[in-house]
Amino acid sequence: MKKLLTFLLLGLSTSITYAQSQREMTQESDKSYKKADKELTLVINKIAAKYAKNTVFIKALRESQSLWIKFRSAEINMMFPGANGPKFYGSAYSMCANDIAEKITKKRITELNKWLKPASNEDICTGSIGDTAAD
Image (cartoon, rainbow, N blue to C red; front, side, top):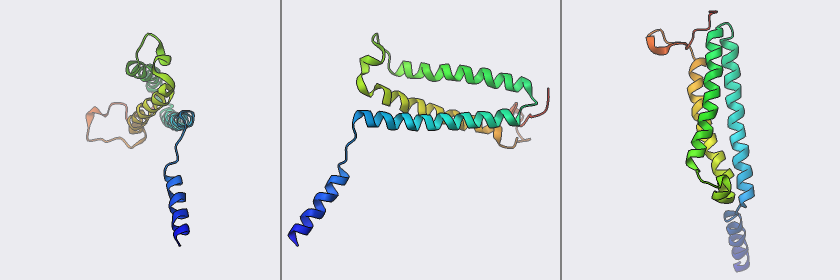
């Protein structure tokens, strides 16, 4: 009985204390970030399809997205500045940068989803939300 209990405890502690290497954590963070980035692309494509007739809006969406990509990069650079760039922060840099990019991307998805919901006629400040008509 003692041997069985010891064996079970040893097996349980081994599964609980599983540790990942930095490389594995970086790969997971990259996979998670890429998943969010694909979701962002899907949302943008849905918006573009819904508002296709409103070419002025589509142009503004493209410009906004271009500037947002620069913003996301600038936020990561601000978080990890340094004369030596990413090498200055070591092997965790990529994992951390992916995590920040994923969080910022998820916020962007939330913001853009407004254009996929029905427009509210009660708020004059909704601007282009729901304005799918041709210009």
